[in-house]
Length: 129
Image (cartoon, rainbow, N blue to C red):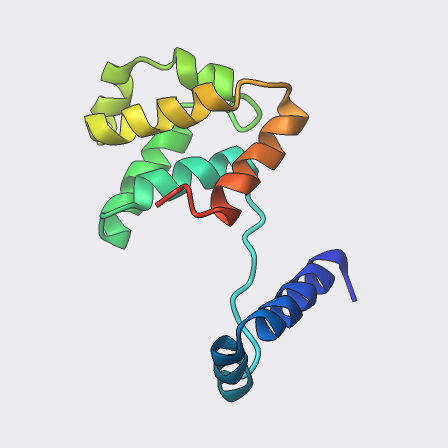
């Protein structure tokens, strides 16, 4: 059993123990078939913001344009904060999404290894909705 599978099993056991209604649903529906994405936490954070309230096709197009702004290894919080609003508007991001991304990034301006954990925390705590 790999580490991700172990965390997933622990999470399911916790949910089943914490909530009898959810336990019934989990037992009735069977195992979760969702697979975690192997994206960097910063890319996942940006993706969650881009995809909010957009159709999959439109969001996918904007996300591809967004990723095209950076070399694969150069997308960092600092690099994203240096990207002008006009550039981000030019690829299709709304002002609200640019502000939301900037706010999140400014709140996680810490060493890179901590950025990963902070971005993960945004997802786990539902802050990227």
